[in-house]
Length: 81
Image 1 (cartoon, rainbow, N blue to C red):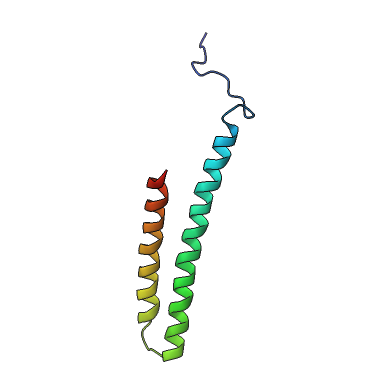
Image 2 (image 1 turned 90 degrees about the horizontal axis):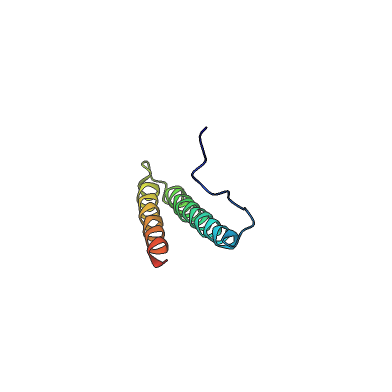
């Protein structure tokens, strides 16, 4: 007969607030990434329309900047602790 090597977990145990805090931190980082990349893409498409570009150079450039800025924010947020 096999035994379970893990102790039973209690979802309302003493570490429940820590798990909730970690969940809120990481989901906040995800929404921050989404907002950064989305706003930079929107600004790029607006600038391309405003200057009537044939190629979407503003969109490409600002989306690249948004991705790099979002990655920087993620790395900074995760290493801060």
